[in-house]
Amino acid sequence: MVLKRNRKKTKAVFIGPVQIGAGAPVVVQSMTSTDTRDVKATISQIRRLVRAGCELVRVAVQDGEAAAAIGAIKQSITVPLIADIHFNYRLALESIRQGADAIRINPGNIPAKHLGEVIRAARDAGIAVRIGVNSGSLDKTALKKFGAPTADALVESALRSIELFESLGFTSIKLSLKSSDVTAMIEAYRSISRKTDYPLHLGVTEAGSLVQAAIKSSIGIGVLLNEGIGDTIRVSVTGDPVQEMQVAYGILRALGIREVGPDIISCPTCGRCEIDLAVLARKVERALAGRKEHLKVALMGCVVNGPGEAAEADIGIAGGHGSGILFKKGKAVKRVGEAQFVQCLLEEINAMTSGREENLE
Image: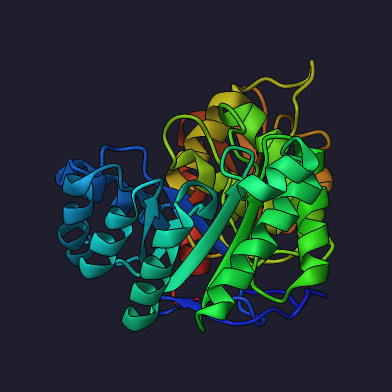
């Protein structure tokens, strides 16, 4: 389900069949961590990402062999494929020939004399381009003017790139202005949002491992989405990119932007807790990973306050010594042995969601 929210109306851009901007749902995307030249491993990871909820996927194109692999990868996946290019414009041209649904380039690290060739090739192929601006790939003129990769430098670099693309009649553009500095990232996106109507891809770059990435992304991406800014997001996590999906959808659910997937509520535990709630939470999270149906699942550490504290949950367990109470909408249904908690929850959830058609658009 997509919840109505006061979002900025941006232009529509299509990555394959997926619409970005113009009121479309905020799209969740990721990037593989595999060597793109290893086609089998890359396809395997993309399929895992898709099962976890990924709606667009990007792969690194580091050389000619990686570019040539785009075609084989694309034939074996169901999600639109974006080729990520740095420095070598020929890799962008080959990726387009191989059927990439979009390309991502940082104009600041591709010579201007070759950018026009890439833009014309993308235009002729009818695919979109993400103009990616970050602290390591600023337009040289903008960097010289501001002396550092400030928010203003990021914005000016993006505007210079837009001017070049538009001069060649190309407008199928989405923008990103990423920084590892969360406040600079927020400031840059706010500014560019006031200056252009192209759809924006939000992210905090080099955000770190899971906990740090979740913190930085929840603040940076969350603040902007709450202000109505942003059309697609990526939570950058060092390590397995599948971890990104849970955080990304968690941000969207917390802000009431998209109700997709399970919202698992669990208490922090206290001295009354007589079950291993941490293990239970991990097992339930793994079991429900990738599900599209939205429901609130509460996992509470005791039977004293559990059902009352999670009264708004669709279903949950309030644990006691060796057993617990299964409840729905805050009302006790039956007692369950601790060893059967996960099985019982999954059976009940499957029964509740069977035949339910979520409107995910």
